[in-house]
Image: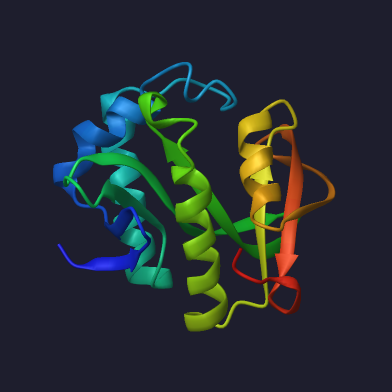
Length: 173
């Protein structure tokens, strides 16, 4: 599978149905997904991958499988998703990683390159991340990548912090 985005340690490529088990290992983990409104089962993982395949066709981007360069092991997903937030269309930088890969900087590294890709290749002028306030690790990823809280919004019936940055304020760290 062709690499879409590459970092020092990671390759990001389009998800395929062969990735369902790897995605389920992430989104099926209650601890990993504790800030989501519900838990996910294997059928949800199939839907997750299929929604991303549809977004590639419709939008030209979505969440990508994140693999280590040292192996083809899928350790997470990260990418750019078009979201409707309070009636406004926004591009969100989103990420989910396997719990055994937390604390190693992978989310920051992958999200940063996705942000650069969005600004330099997709012509995005503004990017957001929708994060529950109690999800401190994800808040730190957004902050390390130069995003700041603009406001609190309701998203999927839950309060979220809307982190954002604009192209003119962004410099890849």
